[in-house]
Amino acid sequence: MSSLNTVTEYQFNFSVNGPQGESDGGFILTSLAGVTDTIALGIAKAFNAQPWPTGVTNPMTVTKQDKVFTVYTTNLTANPPSFT
Image (tube, rainbow, N blue to C red; front, side, top):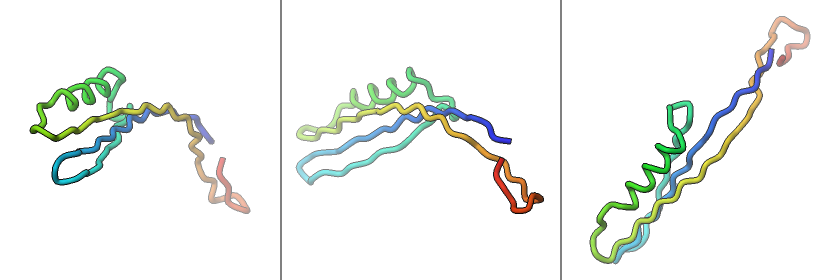
């Protein structure tokens, strides 16, 4: 039997720019881990508030995505086997 599941993903991206060059990074946190809009925005705000060395910039952005997806169970005794 299939079911609809939902999850919210928060994608964090940052780029360290300084005299030595540029380095990009990022990570994803989800509502399944208990992350909310308030937490996600707080992480980005705190990251951007850090005092970086002179000449270094490191802006962080966060993107929110709400996803709905269908999860199917299998019926391996059916002929042919199927997803339901």
